[in-house]
Amino acid sequence: MAPRNTNDRKYQTERATADWRRRSIPLLIFLAFLAPGCTKPFDVNVSTAEPVKVEMSMDVHVYQHGDKDEEARAAQKNYKDVMTRRRNRMGEIRELKDNRLVGESAEGLLSIRNLPAGEYGDYVKKTVAEENEDRNFLMQYEAEQKDKPVAEVRREQWRHAQRKSFPGEWIQVEDTDEPGTFRWIQKTGSSEE
Image 1 (cartoon, rainbow, N blue to C red):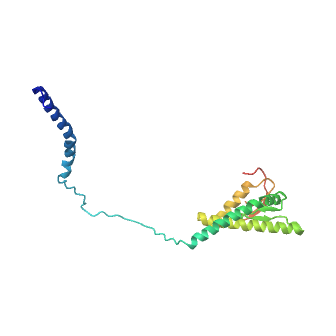
Image 2: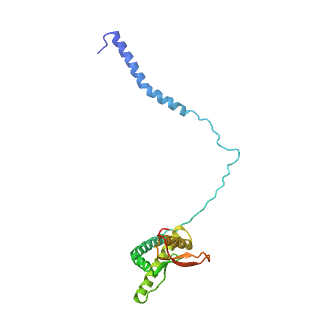
Image 3: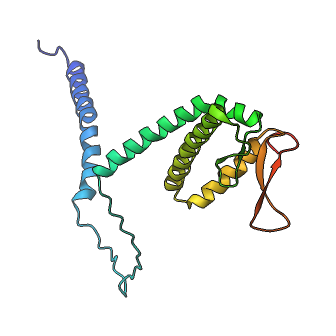
């Protein structure tokens, strides 16, 4: 259909011009951002007058995997087994301590203070030997895990056993008269002192 008068034609021309401007704005914005990227960038000097000197110290640790992992798993299994045995034996040890037959020595181990005669004496020896074997294993394991000397772990265990012992139980304490020696006493006061 042809335009009827000049006003219609003029309207159509203005409309076409407005459409063209509206469509060309995004193109102009794109070109405005693209144009600076096409120019040659200016040079930036990042060199130094003298070479940069860096002092470096490096430690190299070489690990061997394989057998060690199996040994670690076996040690962990043994650790769990030992903890289970100690937990199961706890009541027996408590009874021996309550009867004042054993005490906590300065080495972090149990020591027989009064050995009963007969089969019960054999039972006490066997129980104390098993407990000490497990304690030795645990102290050795802790020393390896924490990279500490075993003697230090023994001392910590001894101090811990002193604090946890109940009044009347036998414990070994440092002799104040002769440094470096120990004497047996029955604990007085409450536990955790």
